[in-house]
Length: 215
Image 1 (cartoon, helix red, strand yellow):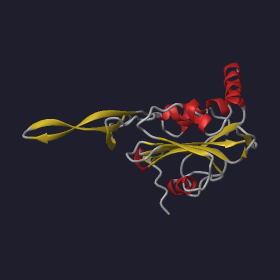
Image 2 (tube, one colour):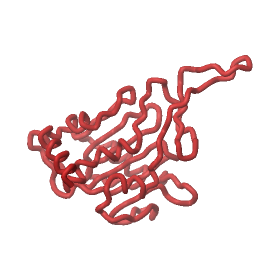
Image 3 (cartoon, one colour):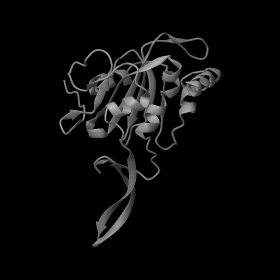
Image 4 (tube, helix red, strand yellow):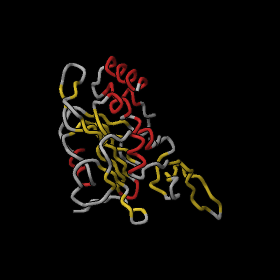
């Protein structure tokens, strides 16, 4: 069973609260970390930049209408994408959890990098049943899958599966559920819009923001 957790200088780029993952990798953290602290603990505090891609034609560099997705940490090329592809930075992905964690409804649970940085995930554990717009209850986890990889959309969903590796992420993404949304990289990421698409009422979002500002 391949975990595909990224290793950098012998250290797994992953952090987890609670039970140790089956592969035994990652940094154990307390369950009260902020999303920013979880980002740091998992080694995910890097950015991606689109850099124009060229082909050598007749001894000259010619733009090919695509861009290389370059990671700031080591200048590695994660993938080649179209020029209209909008990357979602890891910082943006983890900021998505801020309101929920600050309000005390969720706690950061696992986070990590897969396939040498092409896939980054963040997961928060729901402390109690969480109510969506219309009164539906959800339990388990809120998962944010951030793909720095052509052909994949940003994916945000509620799931009962605890993600700790490539295989468990595949299980979570393959579950039949209505409580998820996918955002094309052709569009700019808007966290508030995603929360509404997931069915979280706008008045509840306002309450979260007020509580987060107070805290």
